[in-house]
Length: 340
Image 1 (cartoon, rainbow, N blue to C red):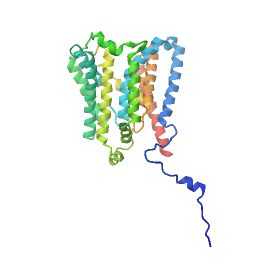
Image 2: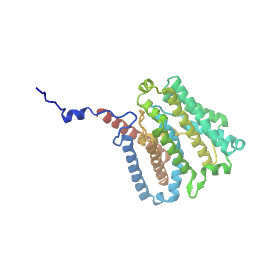
Image 3: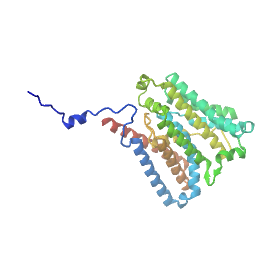
Image 4: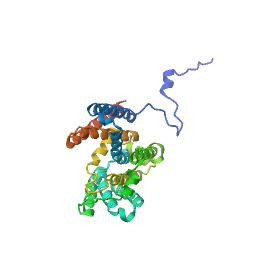
């Protein structure tokens, strides 16, 4: 007697799908970071519409280019911060790094020359980032605590280096290299686009980027899978420091001077740009494009309020509220995702 062959029901087959081939990325719906990017774009449109209605000159080419230049410095620092935050860390010392790198490079510009000064700024920033990353990773200290300490150390060194005095009269040739124009487009905007592409490739198309996100998602699991967790965290701080150093040189080339208080408060604006752009403060998820858009959003708000002669302290209040709102949205999205 032949026994009937029992075929599984369609529902049972669907419940146990065949595993995907190794190395083949699964197709997913747009993630939360992508949704946040769309949200930032929408916020930019609303911001531009409001300020254009209040101040018609807001949408002028000259104002848009100036806003882009101002936002470029913050955005470059924020791109480095994105790589740190995606690992679950944070760097509160970026503003102080700007101050220290700025005065050292400005003081030695005539001796070193323009190009060596730019290189020195990047290397000095990377070295300061290495100190931050090493103290945090090697000694298993919270990056928040470490960079809170180095924030004061670096700022103090900047004041000691110049005895609290500003440095004026930087070489015009040096200023033209970084703050000149190509056609009608300012160099800082062109440099921002180039750095954005590089950071995007690092985070989304490189082995280091995979490791950065893995460490931020689960450091213990990453360690067990063979990822050098400490080295990955240090690498993130080094890149962030190098970008901050470059932004410092870009800043002094733009204003033609340097002082030990340069960069004060940058850490707040930078973190706001990163979080608004969709990077989770808990680590593991980041958006390079979102970070740049977040910096542009904050820059447009700051420019619009300045054109309206709004008190600068009120601008700080708005920045703080934006950070709070972005963190609340991020936390709500994380809880929603955890329930699925």
